[in-house]
Image (cartoon, rainbow, N blue to C red; front, top):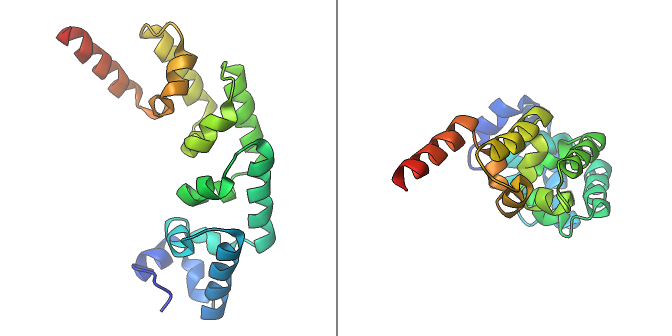
Length: 168
């Protein structure tokens, strides 16, 4: 047994699984382990299209993140396997945006909060403007110390600030 807990969900999410042989699946698991990933089954479950990525592509992406300055790309990708599917130019563009917004170490932020790579330019710019509007004198400082704030919905952030003002 390969250990997939919900094969039906896997196939619904990525129908291509029905065309891949057991040897093919075992080979992909072996490649992921060889590269350094500890739980390939979990990675393949959370990101089913990963089964179709070539070994060369996976190795190239790991090296790409390493060259960007990510200290442990294996750890980062393990937490968010979808990063293997991001276009390199898109990642570079996102890093440049963080620099433009005033972040000194954008790669560190992305390494610890890789989901920010999926946020749109409009959302990131909007969150930074909102932090300034809400009274944060140094929005970059708060976003650097708490990057998850960039992912919060505007309404939630405004509501929390209003609640805290009323309490004080």
